[in-house]
Image (cartoon, rainbow, N blue to C red; front, top):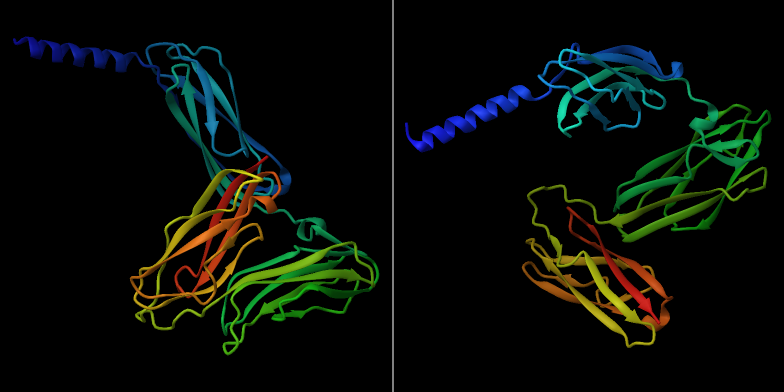
Amino acid sequence: MSAKRIILLIIAAFAAFSASAQARLVFEPDTWDFGTIRESDGRVSHTFTGVNRGDKPLVILDVVTSCGCTVPEFSRQPVTPGGKTQITVTYDPMNRPGTFTKELWVYSNERKKVASITVQGNVTPREKSLEELYPVDAGGGLRLSTTLSAFSYIYQGRQVQGSIGYANASDRTVRLSLRPQDESGLLQVDAPQRIAPGQRGEINLSYLIPAGTPRYGTLRDALEVAVDGRSNGTTIVAHGIGVDARPADATQKSPRAEFSENILKFGPVKHTGPRRKLSFTLSNTGDAPLIVRAVEGEGHIATTLAPGRTVAPGDSFRAEVLLDPATQDFGVLTEHLMVVTNDPVRPMRRLRITAIIEE
């Protein structure tokens, strides 16, 4: 027998011995179904029993789960070959209605996964309180489900609608008024003027950008909520981004906007230093002219990219970002530059600009 074959046999025998010597923890069953449980009844628990089917003692080092709703309890006492150990798993159904399946991984003192166990079931939701359904206290007994209605993209000529729930938690009729603070001129609001005791309903909000008079970029409206003529500062905010309508014909030629950078870093900059500039490239990889519709920043930087800039198919435009450190506060500066184009796939892109303003 050759020396090489002898070595291979020795390695195989050693591997087989190592495998047989490894501790092996077996749970039968390894899955427990709680069935249908009620959220209002609180936590449920089940104890799994495992047997060490290996040839040497083991210690459970940890039992890992991906959710804080599932908590294991176990002993770190050594489990001899043939010996038993238990793991109690507690599941908290609070605010988790519906079906669930949670797997837990058991690790030994050798830092190896030696077993897994699973709990599952279905949670019947509890009836939520008025305060949970309408968490915003708008004053005077009026409660709201939220104060934000975000519309994402608002396409020219296409109406978008949203709603905010309300409930009168008082024992009297209240008068509701919404006082405009910031106005885009395009928001339509449908809200009751009087709300009876216990009445629930919705404040309906909608945007419509007329196709003949397009608006691009951020649309934002803020409405101060007043109940019986008084306000506690609660404000409803609606916002979205005006973009071109998507073409009805998917085969129609269209532009594609590509940016060379997503993040521009000035790094450390002296407050008394000169103005600084960085650049990025906007390219059109589509087959129709790319038009910049809106460019919005937060006031810390300026850019040479402006609305109306057209980039031909296959062409590009190199834009500059300008920073005047003397006009900035000391410390970390972060600016977000929003660019809206007529790219039908990704009409809005954001670039992040950072700097550290030093003395």
